[in-house]
Length: 607
Ligand code: F6R
Image (cartoon, rainbow, N blue to C red; front, side):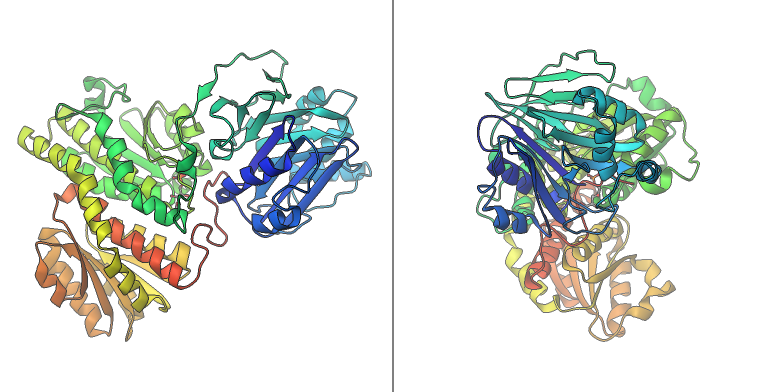
């Protein structure tokens, strides 16, 4: 939530700031702004709306002057999206400017104090108190002042600070919210995420909580809040700049859907050696693994939906009870969890506040945490006991697709790995499943080839008011994802229902013409599903089915998208593709802003 960039160097900062913000726009897009030190003043330009407004106002940053500057793209928390609430925020006299990602929980108290001292506030944001506090405490040394201000702040923050009097420095600090430093030649960068700086440098430093970075043109110094110097190794980012660009596609979402076979292959292949699943990342011994009596899965949104799929798979293959929990709920319900519970945390960004806090709660209660994360070096990846990375590459579209699919791939790997260790998967089944898993990317390619039919069905339904998704077992877990994908990007109301549950209330919503998307991929449940489909058809529903190609008779039941037959465990990876494409085409036909749906942001770093 919210993206921060900063530049200090010998070139004009404007074009980089605008380019960096564009690459971070997925983090928030209700307003944006930049502040540059022109030599005589801190010049601020801010605009409500998507970044394009600011780009047009500044001719992509070319009309801005100054070789040091900070920028911000906002997802509003305190104060509506507006020019005045957009960041950067200036102190009262205009000597200091601040960009912030996170929430200052005690901002009202601080604001009341400063107001009582006669300081006038311009915005409704929590961030402005930081700029005002800096000016209030400033005695000639910006670093000392920032350290003093940090003592007053409660909450989470990544901050970039510049001063009118010092055109040779950017101060950056983080607590809980992400921030990285990019190292160039005679220039250095600040960003919430590496995608903002990939076009300039791949050499980065990661700031840890409460570390302060002092960025100059010739170098970066990192200190603690006690002013002890911290010496860090640089990291080289492996992502290629093209991975964070559209590459000729109209939308990132479509590009990312099409990238799924590759992303899954990259996630699976290095972990299958000589027909065996090898998860070196898991440090637990076989004995320790056998001690677990329960698995607990924590995540939010689509990552939670992966957790619901995992519940079905793990319980079937490992014979261990599994709870999939919404991270935001888990934290506040005094969960029954201890050192006999294995916790699996799933997060694309590795920064989701609720997931991170739920993870810490599980750790406090003695549970071993394995995380499944896409962003290398993110907070969840670093703070979990073991981390398994999904090698999906950068995911830019707000609606997740390839991250969801690679998370599923890791679940399959874990099911096989644990199943072998616990002896719950017999060798023949193990070998057959590993073989099928290796063929999964090619099968996904086949489903993607069928996109014209999905586009045609989207053209039939895109004007609908409500669309229902139904399924049983893993198909139900998948229908949750299909429904979320559709509603978040097309704004069509949608619900996902366990097919057997419909007649306990929801069927009253079905009327003539209501579209129902039925997932019918599970052999042993086809009969039950067909009965549920007949029930809604009788009430006037138009039914679209997703079924395996060994059941051509499904075409008589509803308009059907066929997917190749694979073993039950792998079915969700194939069946989710038509659901993603359907949501994409519907949103496209409705003219929605697919990559940046209203009110959303990709990385949810507030609770
Ligand atoms: C939906 C979507 C979100 C995320 C959720 C968790 O398309 O992307 O529901 O899945 O916000 O985010 P991560 O995985 O970053 O923790």
